[in-house]
Amino acid sequence: MNRRQWLRSVAGGAFSTAAIAQEALPEHPRDLDYPKLSYTPPDPEQYRHELDSGAVAFLVEDRQLPLITVSATLPVGAYQVPPASAGLAGFTASQMRAGGTASRAAEEFDEEAAFLATQVGCSAGPTSTSASLDCLAANLDESLDLFFEMLKEPAFATDRLEISRARALQGLERRNDQLRSIQAREFRRLTYGDHFTTVQTTKASIEGITRESMQDFHSKRFDPGRMYFAVAGDFDTADMVRRLNAALGDGWPASPLDPGEIPAPAHDPRPGVYMVDKTSRDVNQSHVTLGHMGIQRSHPDKFKVQIMNSVLGGGGFTSRIMVRVRSDEGLAYSAYSRFQPGTYYPGTFAAGFQSRNATCAQAAAIVIEEIQRMQNDKVSALELDTAKNFQVETFPRFFATAGQVAGTFASDEFTGREKGYWKTYRERISDVSADDVLAAAQRHLHPDKLVVLGVGDRQAMLAGNPDRPEYSFEKLSGDGGIENIPLPDPLTMEYPEA
Image 1 (cartoon, rainbow, N blue to C red):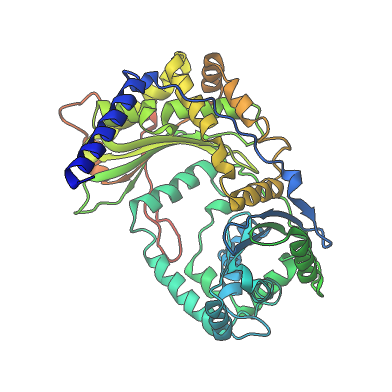
Image 2: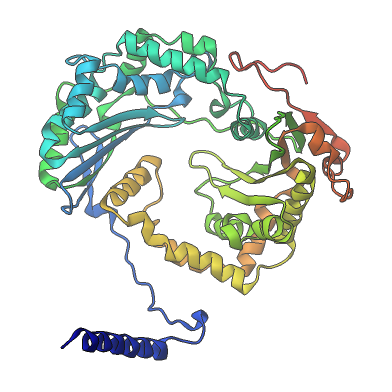
């Protein structure tokens, strides 16, 4: 076959294949027929192991790559620290990694981890501390030694503490620079009030953290019997159980203090319009958040609220707030709503956007209109199906990898999620009706209790759009007026009088 004949043969085959494909394709993408999604979530009991110390481990083998990941979660967090010592939990966790151990200086620990190509870390949040290990399966022994040395016998080297302290103090000076961080901080203060999640570190609290205070916090809080492990990768399960038991039982005493209850906020948010004046010559936009208190994860309406919020503003480009604010009116690049139930206490409902100063009031009014419409009109069949199908069809993402399987189940056990949650997840989503969504909106959305927070150029936001005078923050505030929130001193977090 010469070159010309070969080209004709290839071209003929291509045309023939194209013709067959053309005949098989439907006239419109909506006519495509997909097989029904079939997926059975894994059973957590298949991977759950109780260790000798009382700790719990979820171990998921994955032999595809010679890698192993280990994470440990403990009930240690900022909620256990008095306000005057704000930052102690976070510093303790970070310095456990940075400050060396009883048997290795900080520099030696770093060099050994680098030589092994092993990543070791530790960080603390409001209600938990997480430690992590990523290593080659061939280096598991040496890597686990580093990991458990960090957890059990941190040295808290003073030179590393001073470096971290200096960085933290520099960060405090910039805490009033970004609109988004100001917005998050002040919205939480308005909704949660005086709560451990609203306590901010200060120059005094950071300077008060010492090697001794971290050692004391560690010795009283880090308990080998209260760890929740998620392990995934190239290992043998029985062998990993043996290794974890040996590491946790090697002369590691239990902590003398009970973790204690995580306190719920006692604040009753005051509805109204609030503004933080933060002008910028380079930015002509402001951030606006509207919201109120929400529900806990254990609430029986959780799935109804989840679908309701997806239609309202949590569903991306198909959600009502995004369509109205972005697509129809062109007032913002992105607009959203979040209704995230809290694990230990009620979460918050929040809707927000970033818009030009002159159009912030109009966009806020549209968001409120959409909240009210959710309470007055049933969602359409298309909206309901879109929201439910997204939740159902993306369900397998929670278990896409061995690491996600182990991590999901370890997190569930740590936070006390009800058993069988994932087994019935899709059915409970699918059972939500338009009537359920309407009832959830009427019970859990409160347009009369909204806290409206604007962060940006206050004068320009209040001036509004002269072409649309019917929209203004004064009208949104009613008789309550607009309350100004001054920026606090970044080092002391003391607020001057408004």
